[in-house]
Length: 350
Image (cartoon, rainbow, N blue to C red; front, side, top):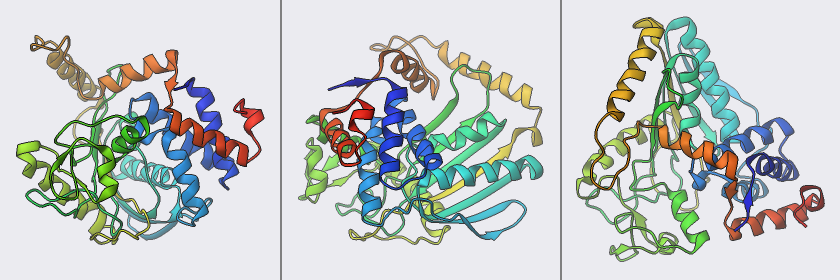
């Protein structure tokens, strides 16, 4: 398993995406988000996705350079048709528009449809947090293939349906929650398959509805469980609401169509803190709150209490220094693509 520095990994991703038809600017955007996910410890949304995206371009499921169309708009809302462009590019632009509107009108929201995978949902609310706002985003895949069973069911009906909320603060690491409403993000099963490792019980059932620790069972008719284990009705209920926000409100609809094109529908919102109280006071109190949480004595088996978002920051600092481990199966695919596009020598991958 090679260990690669983040800067080199970004360069590799840019060259391969450009070989697959992306313009430099959008390739750099996709690369930045993917390697950023690796740095946060979320390898499921990292460099492992690049071969998948290029394959989707070849099949016409992603359209490099796609137009960004605003199909409905008010001073505080926007409806965006991404025309099957790279989700990172489309959603980043949509969130920036939402932040700009909230700067003027205090609150703003947007929905986005017909775009490809948006990756790590946290990337977009964190844009709002850096602008002194509270950011929220939810995502769903519309009528595409589903992988998660409803609580009490054994057939997939829902996506992994992630949600992120990010808050501005004075903390070194941003404070946010970013989670799937399934027991685990689907991409983590892909990483487990690539690494030949098993998964914990409680993530997956096989095609017969039995608990499974084999990540390959997902592609053999199995399905993922909702967040919460025995209390899975909570994750299930939250997932349903996110599907309504990101699937029905966006106009994507719902359902399970295994032949469907991957289509991340998103709802996003930004709230200007200054509309509610002075931003400096808010950031100071959020910082004190996080420190108050950390002051708790650790329970048995723990060495420290972290606030939400802190472990990702610590992971990033470590990996920026030590480099990112890339599983052999993924590295082999990257090398094959570099050879296909004639950039293997240039990237030192021959």
